Image 1 (cartoon, rainbow, N blue to C red):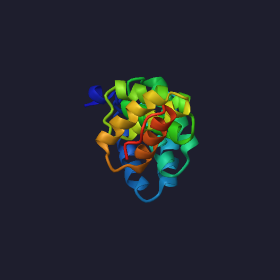
Image 2: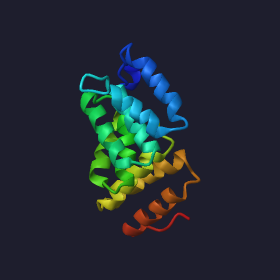
Image 3: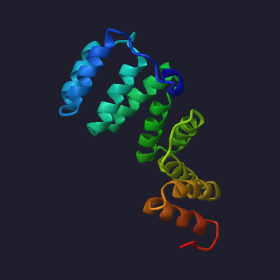
Length: 168
């Protein structure tokens, strides 16, 4: 399982602490983070850094989450969930150039996509002035999630920028 996802294995000593942090994190993100911060050091498995990033994201601290996802990817570049989460957060923060690279990496690693990755990639292309590539990615996103108004509106905008007729 670890090889398929690029997710690194935790050490035996980390597993019970992470399991406890996971349970605590269901109701108290700060307490779960405190528990993990007490054990994390430079020798910790990248999974610890990833989980801290997830908890920060769920607690609403996206900047801190991005920091931890970046550290995770520095340690294990093939960790596709870390790439997917980082790319999504970068796009949502308006860091379109970084997000494009990270989201393409997530897709190249085989990240599953319900349309979110392609839709956000399209947004990145649209914001960098590449309306044709944005259109292509919006079309993929809409095939995977036909009811998404953001992707439909983005497709409309990309078509308009290219001088093409509306589909809707």
